[in-house]
Length: 99
Image 1 (cartoon, helix red, strand yellow):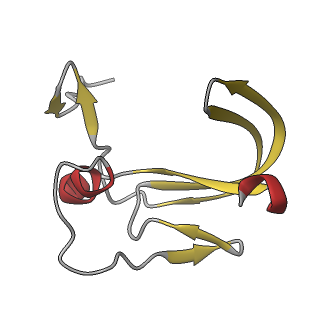
Image 2 (image 1 turned 135 degrees about the horizontal axis):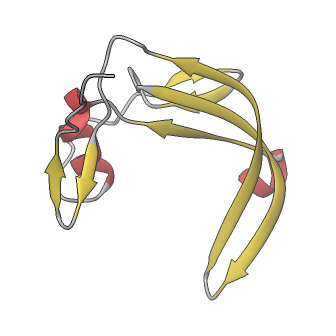
């Protein structure tokens, strides 16, 4: 699908989307089909912190995987949310120090 269209989206999930993260990671079973939103004619995860619309710049094949490197041509930012972080097998909260 990405190879034929030459486009793809990247989504950064918000802290409130832990269940969505677990669903896409296969750690949680869906009770109904997931419904995507659309941005720049691409499917995006609903209420993401950031959604990037990209064109394919290059591809790298490794075994049965393909890594797509993209050029970002549009972005959507939800500046009323905090990022979801996952490190060392656990979900974490970022702690910001005063500037």
